[in-house]
Image (cartoon, rainbow, N blue to C red):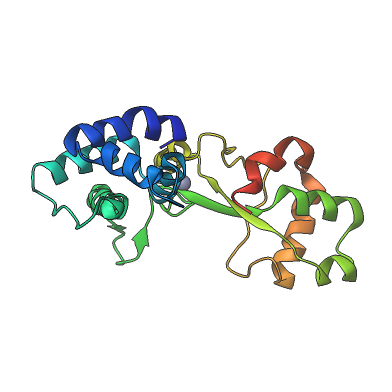
Amino acid sequence: MTWDEFRQQWYPEHCACFTGIPAWMAKLEKSPDGPATRDILKSWYGVLRDVELREAVRASHRMHSGEIDEPCGFDRHPAAIRNAAGIQREISRPKPIYDADGNQTYACPICFDGGMVHVWHPATVAEIARRGITDSIRNRSLYDCALPCTCKMGDNYARSFPRSPRYDPKRACIIGIGGVSDRDEQTRLLEWIETHKPFQPANYENAFAEFA
Ligand SMILES: [Zn+2]
């Protein structure tokens, strides 16, 4: 969920279930060296940011109704909500599909139903496109990142990271299991660059920063 969804929708909803929370936060803020309410909310958001708003609200209601145990202490609420929402998500994942030979098949051949695609970071692609893979580039860090896939599973991630660009095969080069320092992967990147125009990183640095 976004920060606005967290602050304007999930948090008020959760406080309507657990009415002692605002007073608890206010008391902490007033105590000497106590954390500011905004800092507490930021750290709560850090725990809940990759939980969907709908799932988080549902988890709050389940906790309020006693279906999920309420943890001891308000500061443990975010982790409990996250766990409860995670369990829900696990249940709603598509069941694995197997072909006639018993091999697992996937609805999405790009992300194998994981929802995220592992690609070369656009800044690394741009640098290698400019200068080739020199020893000095090899000896420094090569960067990768993950982008939400174009499929339904990717939609879930895209809702959680609304500022992230989506994976686009024309604009981002996939990295295989070898990773950035694997020579075969680097050779495949050079081949990819020959047929594609790489990202202009100036436009994408901010959006990519959190995935690097
Ligand atoms: Zn996919």
